[in-house]
Amino acid sequence: MKAPTAIIAEDEAPQRADMLRLLGELWPDLDILQVCVNGAEAIEAMGRHKPDIAFLDIRMPGGDGFDVARAAGPGTHVVFITAYDTFAVQAFEDGAADYLLKPVKRDRLKAAIERVKSRLASGAPADLDDLLGQLEARLGSGREKIRWITANAGGAIRMLAVDDVLFFQSQDKYTRVVTASEETHIRMPLKELLPQLDADEFWQVHRGTVVRVSAIRTVKRDEDGKMRLHLNGKVETLPVSPAFAARFKGM
Image (cartoon, rainbow, N blue to C red; front, side, top):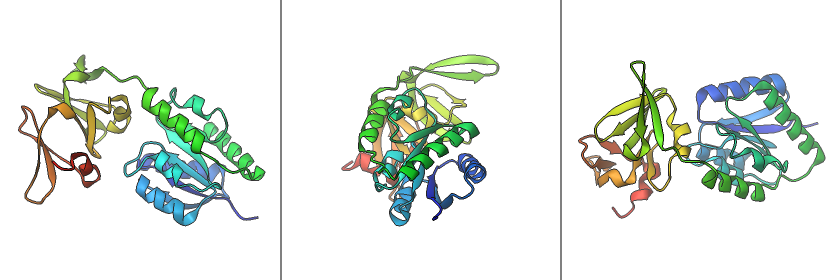
């Protein structure tokens, strides 16, 4: 019997390594055809390999897990991987797919594997259209937006209002938080923070930068033709990556 095939799409290296290790232990005959680091690569891999299973991070640069899932054929069973819990759990109750909460636990992955094996054995098509609609609705409206940022400073806890933040920027394992008058760092990665921000107020302009739209004074191109944001009251400028340049089309 032909071994089942799979792709993995996860942009964080430690999570990719953990998933490969656990799948090797729990499903040794699974043929992992490709490990992808972003959504665009995963979409291309999905079309080329047409795998039986796809383990997809929901939040990735270059196209999220929903974009990749839409590229899946009816024979591909999707297991989503997410850092968020309460807004997603109910959407999977109908059994059309499964999901794993980060960090992925061995027992939970084992249960997901058994669930996928059962579906593969039944030969039932993996129709994700309805499920994707449910998930996107929950991700778009089910989250509460944060209003305060909690930061440690010299043993004390400081509270910063999100309304005062001009931009957030990734720095190693931390996120830099900049207001008009000060800045600090928080331990939450930008990737986890982003879904908790109001998408109408904060725009991602670079993989590592999210800026308050109302703080943008001008958008200019530098000597290399690359876009940079000039903010109100700040000398520092912020780069706009090509992936997000369309936000400023016509500027």
